[in-house]
Length: 422
Image (cartoon, rainbow, N blue to C red; front, side, top):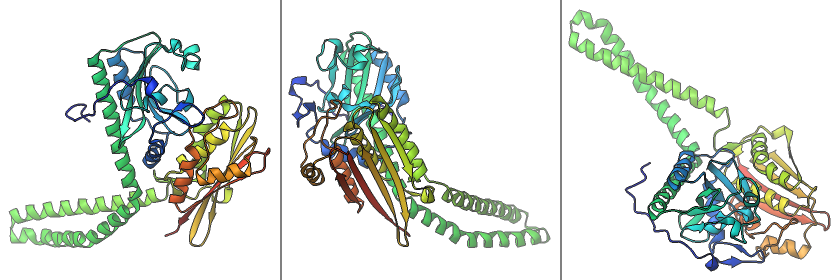
């Protein structure tokens, strides 16, 4: 896609002292945070396989003259690095990131020396390898919300000219443009069943007419030499060859379509695939806190397919929340099951932690959306929107969300989602 020729919003530096701080955690949270995480959920990004901006990240570092650049997406708990250049990292807790400050405003956020800033001097990437010093970030503005940030970083203090800042702004807009294309593709995938049904009907309907054309062409071809209609024969031969190739193409499309229908489509999951994706994303989070994160699936139905839509966001928020409130050397158990019934299949996601549990009045606050953010067992800061997002998404899918807890014996979070058959 072109990087020029578009009318782009203007970015301005923001004063860190003007950042809006909410709740008990004293962290920067956008005023439209719930709208932001809902918009991110609608994108339905699978962070296990999403690297659409690798060359843009490299270009950003080249323009800025920095060693490192990232394209980061921030959800309720985690900063996901979806493309990187110069340093290998896939994720970090949102509260540890610099980009959490970038997504609060509409302009750029710059720190010339992270080691001299009280907010960042003790972060692992400043006090230890890679000993970062400089940060410059631009928000990824998508439909009036900031989903993440394009940032460049360096091991030494740095500065950017206005010209370089402008070029980075154009790259940030190109990232957003590609996100829009991704969203459009996802919307098409959600309608794929209707599209394929129409495709098969069209292919079926054209077989008869094309078969008739080929039959007629064969007859004319057989008798053509007797009539000495050389020019007509040449023309009929073209019809014959063209019609036959279309028929063969129709057969090929139908055959490939049937093969694809026997496999898992890109917008579907099985319990096995669902478990593997969640393990890849969240086991590293658990290990960083010395927590044992385990998964179990119901074997009789673990190969049945079901829609992918928003499940990674739902399960991810439940797992991140459980890790947050489980002490070191504790455990989090995730159970994924799919029950097959006459008129519908029902997916169940259960997340059990070994934390201190939740008092009954707090459970009620969580289920009604009135709870305030609290710190995790290792001081992790909370943003207060993770479980609200789960509740909203599950209700939108005609599912149920329940919390059971008997302090101090941990908490159990259960989600059920029905999928009608036919």
